Length: 136
Image 1: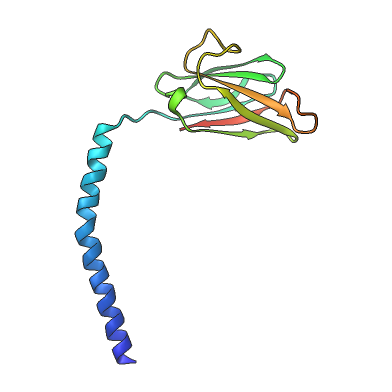
Image 2 (image 1 turned 180 degrees about the horizontal axis):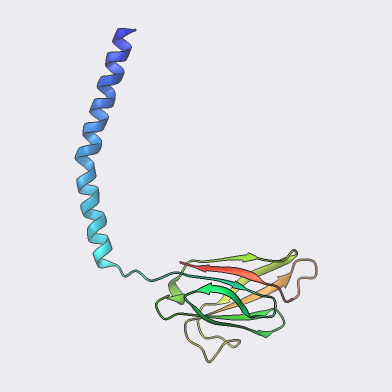
């Protein structure tokens, strides 16, 4: 039993030394990567079924362009075309999805805009419905 305890402690000590030796090199690689890439702000919004902006951060404006068609204009600090976007429906039987990440036929005059279409899951047709938007 003592042999198992000692060998286990030795294995943990060796693993600690290996982790300590590898960590600075890993940190240097991550530091170089952070300097080379550009970071953008994130945006979050709660959009009502009528297209109005209920609450939001880094969102300049939101509107309903037609039945089931919504436009969300983001702050210039948020890069809409390259953002990871998460949509969550605020109403049952509604499915929002990203139609376009920049000027489109729906939101054609506005750059840095996300076009969202909302569908009724029963009929498969466009329908009005509120949603939450998160752009990272």
